[in-house]
Length: 520
Image (cartoon, rainbow, N blue to C red; front, side):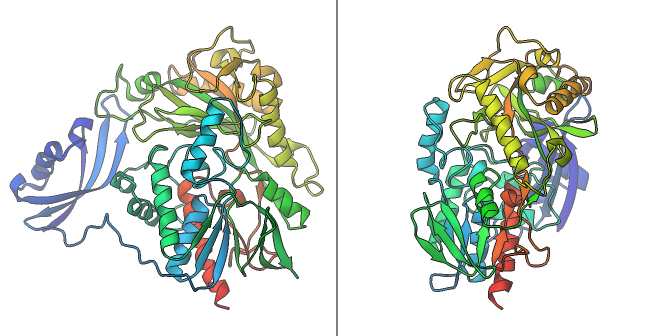
């Protein structure tokens, strides 16, 4: 006999089957000995009351065993060595999942990545942390796996109507991710686990006849009569294909400039910028769980905040419990920060982006004449932070209350940001409409989360890569650029995704459209 059941239990009871099995048996009015198998389908935390509870949705078998393990899906990839190729520019989640889907569909993917593989990339990232140098082609933004590989691993997305999130999770599970990502309401892998998973995906692509090439930057699109013919690499090598996927991520400014130079239509769009804010994780735990210490069975607490300030949203972004803040610059003369959490989320810090919307009229320019204005605005903000930080990747920082009250911080608390911090009057050099909206919103967040508004918290500059200021347009029907046949803009850099899961879904969708295109 098979039953679906929902129980609400304590964190300890949810931690092990030996604790929740008697609860299931009592609810089903059967002996625990008759329960032969249980499978958690969904797990979520309810911290709305002082007593934190865990919601569990389970499949339960009584007097029988399941015939199929739905948490282990097999994927049927084809050998595509002799098949027609499609070029994928970028080995982030959009590019890698597009490649896997193409292999399923019988098309040979040729993945071109400007950065290094995950292991070689580690050395360049270590140099940034030691404030030695920033390699513009190998950093937190560029390299195998994209920006997500070394800057977190959150898999939650609201883009569930665009494709199967579960399929994306199953692919990650098949390549080494924990089965927990299949059941948690807000699944997370962790930056310490992602490199191995990404490497496994690369090997799948190569084992079935696809190609993955590192340290090869695209320098030109080859186009004749508005039909794509392939790409040209920085070393002059040309690769031919009737289909080119642009999955270059939101930090590839040179790609936008290349398209603009080639006369390919781009669209300006709203984006968001602000700061990273860091609190002691114990403080966030005490606020969210209403307790002095969260105990053994609860994860590091998260939060989500939003406020309307002068007709613009101010909101938390990419909240990283038990995480660290990392230097995410992609060029030597800019300062960009991001957040990440290891799989255990066990550092003593909590950080989150805190950003405000930037609408097109905030930029104050004729976008019909200069569609790259938003890109320039973003870049100028990063240069301001660089010039007001310190030497190299030393970041500007200010205590939270000091920033709101427009005073320089006499000293700074301990931080997870390893290159180092410099006390900076961020309230003076930030663009006015970012500064004033943050100064209005932060005390309001303190009203929503008692204790959040404190000088124990740090603002670190700047969080500027939440999304791209540009969209590369494409047809809703066939995903091709409306001007260039065979060009498929894809993922976060093209403006059609935000995060690992939604980018992966978009990559799969692009691959499906390529199949229809190549069959013509």
